[in-house]
Each structure stands twice: as C-alpha cells, then as structure tokens.
Image 1: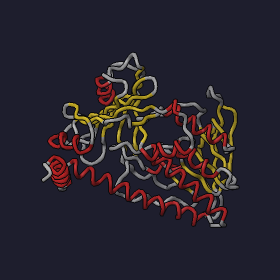
Image 2 (image 1 turned 90 degrees about the vertical axis):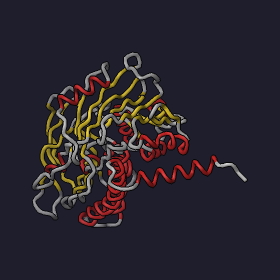
Image 3 (image 1 turned 45 degrees about the vertical axis):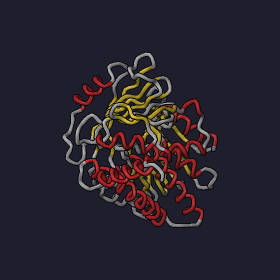
Image 4 (image 1 turned 180 degrees about the vertical axis):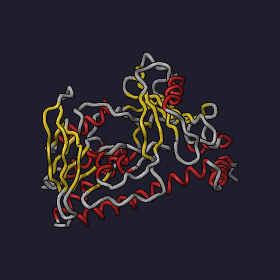
Length: 383
C-alpha cells in the first residue's frame, strides 16, 4: 500500500478527499465509528467555512449568529473600534452588525466529512486502532499493526498493513507522532473545557449571540458561549504557555460550572499550541497534520481550519509525488517545507497579537491613532 491515513477527523478526511480519484493506493482508518463526538469549541473560521462550502456542506448543520467580544484588550478604544469597524457597542463589548459568526457541532462536521469520503469512494475502515509502528530500515515501508473492535467495543481481530507513507491525523495524543520518534517531543498544551446546553437550559440572553468573554486581566485565556444548532457550546480556554499561571483540571471544571451552570457533562481536553519552535523533522514516510503537528491557535479559534489545510496539503503532495514518481523522502520533505512556511506565518500572527495584548509593542498606540484619524476624517465638516 502507498498511503495509510490514521484518523478521520477534518485532517484525515481532507487528506482522503484530496487523494480520491488520484490513483494512489490509499486506506483511511479510525478507531471510532461515526457519528462520534469530538471535544471542540465548534467555531469555524472563514478558511474552514470556505472549504466546507466548496464541498456543499448542508446549511442545516451550520449555525449562524452575531459574534460578541466582551472586555477586549483595548477597552479605551472600544467606542472608536465600534464606529470605525461598523460594529455595535454593547457596554464595553463589541457585537457584529450581522450574523457572521459560524459554528458546527463536531459530531455533525466529522460525520458529514466521512460521508463525503464515502461518496468519493475513499477506502475506509472503522474500529481499527493503531498500536505499533515500525520498519526494518529507512528504505522499507512502515509496518502498522493494531486491533479491530466492534461498535460495542468487542475485540474482533487484528490488522497489519505495510505502507510507504503513514499520515498522522490522529489528534493531540497522536499515536503516529509518538511511535515514529525515538523521544516524544515536549509540546505546550493548553487546557480547555466544553459543555453543551440545550435551548431550554442555557442562559444566554439571545440564542443568536455567540459570546467570547475575556475575563482575566493580562491573560489571553477566555470563556465562550457559542450558539450552535439546538443550543449552546459553553467552555473555557485556559492558556498554559508563556507566563500564565497553570490551572488544575478540577479548578477548570469549577470555573466552567460557574460559567455554564446547566447542561450535559463538562469535558476537558488538551490543546497542542502553535509555538515559535519549528516543527521537528519526522522520519521519512511520516506526515503529521492538524493537532498531531501542533498547529492550533486557540487565541483566535484556529483549529479546524488548520487541520483541514494540513490534511488537504498532505493529500495533494502525496498525489502529485506518487504520480510523478518522487521517492518517499522527497515527498516527506516537500510536505514539511510547505507546511513550515505556512506555520511560520501563523506563528508570526499570534506573536504579534500576544505582544499587543501584553503591551510589548506599540501596536495599540498605532491602532488608536489610525482609527481616530479615520473617524475624525469622516466626521469633519466638508469645506
């Protein structure tokens, strides 16, 4: 086999769809059966929404709402930002003038993407959990072994696959990332929580409002309450990197209970945060995507889009590489090089934003002067 994709979330599905009809011998596996839930904030950036729209995502599983940000970092600029940006001023917060905030429950998103893969005739297997990964030498294919379980968890058998390339799309606790390296690289992990509330349970004043509330001074951590189909997704992102004090899982649960008193069980998970450090080179024939490659920027909600981008990029490079006869080493380094270029751009953006939040540069002063000039120009009487 040429390509084995491990994990069928947004990254794995995007990779499989990019390889569909390419002629590459590929198989995608996931340890779960779909539909299955995935802990997530459910927010969609413009890039993720554009990808889903290209693939004709059903409107019934997309929720639109008015986005609101409370306690922004430059509170003294809020009135000016509202006027210059065409947003509504709500106390000391900003609310969008139209329903431009989009969310999708991950149980709906991931199941729909898998259905897209099925329609594109992508070979897939479910209940397959990878447990070992090895090869004799760098010129040999990878041997991947694991167990097969039924939907109710009963052991049904084992599998063994030889693949030239293994694409790790298996999330923050990536088995592929762990097994393919001599030492597991340390990755900054932020902590987050999530609770779903039904429409008759949540206490948001307006069901069409998706709120992001920066509740802690000089700390990029925030609480959210996003409007989703049938209710809200409420949770807290707590930044564990930089110099932010750490929080225990128990304390995070207590904060979430305060933030969203009613709803289903509160779930917590770790988020592998994008950092300044370049990605470590993977062995030849291993491509890491999405959370497995630590591409998440939780400060402004980049996660689903980064998974989709990296998964699609991996699929495109694999298709082109095998079709043109490139060797596996060339394919691996081409993917890493192109992903690193995008990753550096993403990291520079988050660094600029964090510097502004912490007052480490003059971004706030420049922003203030530019906005005030714009407002003054529009409001000045014409001669």
